[in-house]
Amino acid sequence: MKGNDYLVVFITAATAMEAQRIANILVSGRKAACVNIIPKVHSRFWWQGRIDSADEVLLIVKTKASLLDELIRLVKENHSYEIPEIIALPIIGGSQDYLKWIDSETTEIH
Image (cartoon, rainbow, N blue to C red; front, side, top):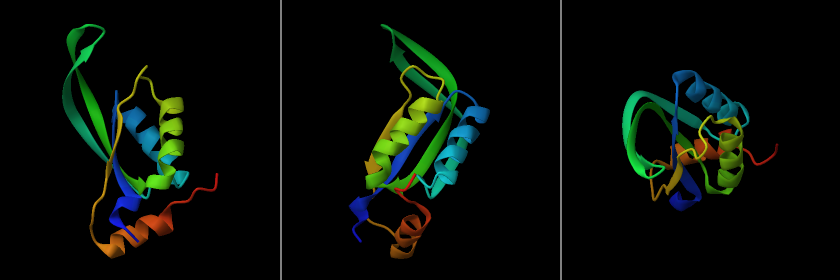
């Protein structure tokens, strides 16, 4: 089991309700072992040629790299943004017990 078989995925949502819904879809569908929901993130970004800002909710998702495409599809289907932030970072190491737990709690079966 290599650390880079696993990902942390950052997703921002417009509201706490949207974040809860997406987290529930990912965890109940076993595309994520865990989703942390962090309220009240203030974002500043370029959008449609100008600097904009928004108060958002941040989801931190722990999953397997093999599930990323399905996770992205589910988020896009259930997100209010035209272009939702979905950024995956590899886990290069960590507790082997935790990584085994991610394995046991996620699945590629629909």
